Length: 212
Ligand code: MD3
Ligand code: FE
Image (cartoon, rainbow, N blue to C red; front, side, top):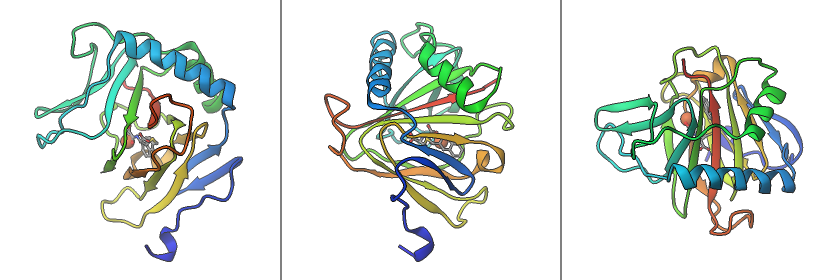
């Protein structure tokens, strides 16, 4: 790990910016986090988690589901947004608490179309990728981390460019907008068992997105 790649971990409240990604460390308190987990459990009860296959045919180590008008889906035909869960049911509505957070943090009137919920169990990771399945990259993405700490890595819009790493912890909120919207990013590892928020351990990441 080079000097430029040392993860920042010192500041646990206030805002840190990592390659254009704004991280609001400790934005959500313990009660808000617990309430969000309950909201998410209700979503998962209607739209169970599944582990998609990438377009290269490899199963992802991250399990996921969605809420809202669209959910993210992948198989060997490619990455896309779908109006229904693979079971055929429509995705449940996005929890009100998350919509309120979206409006507060982004200041936008526009509602997000999709709420992607990623579940990282022990050993799960997400390789460096760009998020480009949405129609208009001028809209920001909002991310909420819950549960175990995650080592998040963000680079530039060029594959193979320099990267910076930061630990995302439970209650952290990140806003990805501007040039960072098309930055390569991923989750290198989870500190499994570092948080007691989730009864079975692991990490949930929520992303709110405008898709249309
Ligand atoms: C930077 N999720 O779902 S969230 C994803 O923690 C995803 O589960 C990660 O990457 C996770 O696609 C990272 C923070 C995030 C989300 C979207 C971004 C960072 C981003 C889009 C562009 C650049
Ligand atoms: Fe992503």
